[in-house]
Image (cartoon, rainbow, N blue to C red; front, top):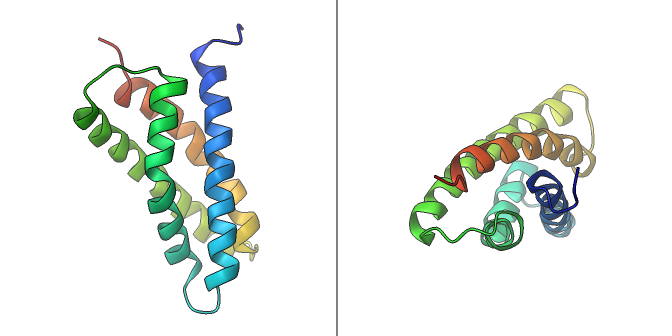
Length: 128
């Protein structure tokens, strides 16, 4: 596989996005854990890094030239499904396996990253 393959590029950008999102969650979690539920904190961190994530995938991973509005709506639809997977994973790992939310997010994000690649590749940034 070549380095410039879409999957490798997606993985690099995805890992950078995941790291940024995780650090955002960690910062907010330690700042707000006594005031807000961890899923509310996850929602806030998602809203904060969503535009950055879209920009990075658009420019670096998929090199898209599509109209921004339609593409953004498709990206947000895929991202919403990924968020749902994250929430379900967090509930499973935190409530079911009694993991600390800061560790549970790592496992939950792994599931949503795979779904995100499929959704973004086949739907958001598809080329006609």
